[in-house]
Image 1 (cartoon, rainbow, N blue to C red):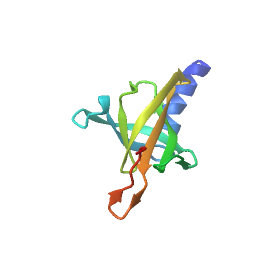
Image 2: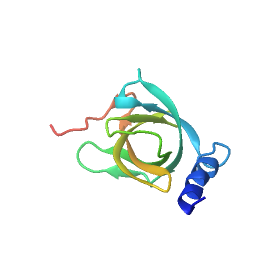
Image 3: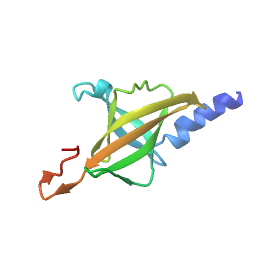
Length: 120
């Protein structure tokens, strides 16, 4: 067994095990809820930032670590922790895994009405 094979086995058996680091999330192929599937991923969130401008909104970014067998496109979306997140970019396959950068934009609200997010 080569080191590359051992790393791929460890990725599947250790890192992408829902008993250890990973979580089961829903993938929407092409962003459509009608074509959904469940995948296992390690989720890593970046610190939340507030985007400036006249329409303030919160941008939550992070990465998903997926098995290299999962095909992902930039038009896909995921349901992570009950929130829909969009794919920003996709990294190359490395050591049996693929990194997918995700983003969730949360408009600022007051009461039940979202604040305008564009210029007048």
